[in-house]
Image (cartoon, rainbow, N blue to C red):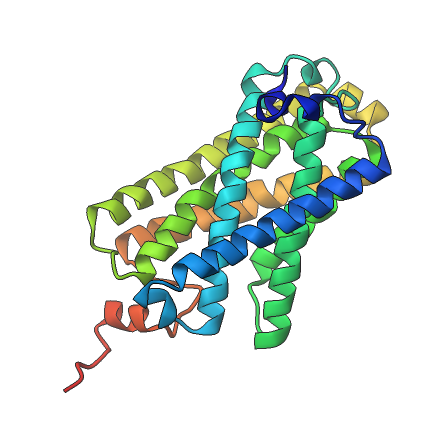
Length: 278
């Protein structure tokens, strides 16, 4: 029994090649993460810190929680594919399992929700984070292409574990907003977060090594649109995104700053530029 079978045995028997099943799971996944967003907003609204944030910061708070929830699932599923799955390694191009199907389709629902929310924010506030937008748009495109061509489930099922940083990033940002940047919890989480980004680099290196080990099979049988998408995104993540975020999180460990909202009140306090009120 695979990883999803431990969630519910019926997930092992679904016909994941059926368009109806795919659309149902994508829809339920989208609604699930929307529900997490609403639940986060409802619970956070009980706190003084959240109520005093600007609208965009509130949206970012709730999206961070959603990403953290997906990140926990991604780590568990990715670890299963990496350490315990014995089927997909037999054919890294065409082999699939119920877990790889389910994870990929759920990921489409998540990234569809994420991209929709980010697009709304960018249009409403007339500004955005290009690197973050590019990352999620490429991830959504990659998931759809893996689903369409039914290939490289092996790499995608393991690669989704790159979301391992999201739970720690969410906690980092929320604690920073709550004025807890000088606490042991925040510093410990930040140390772990920086280390997790190093682990991302190790996992990315592993994916490169595995692709070279199975190069003949990949070159001969992988559809060229998937080939271009996979190696372009892997190169971008390996050589641009992860190094940049590792640097930023290391810098943030030394100087607790929210670079997503440079003009926020907590950043002003960090710089010592916020005057005391009478």
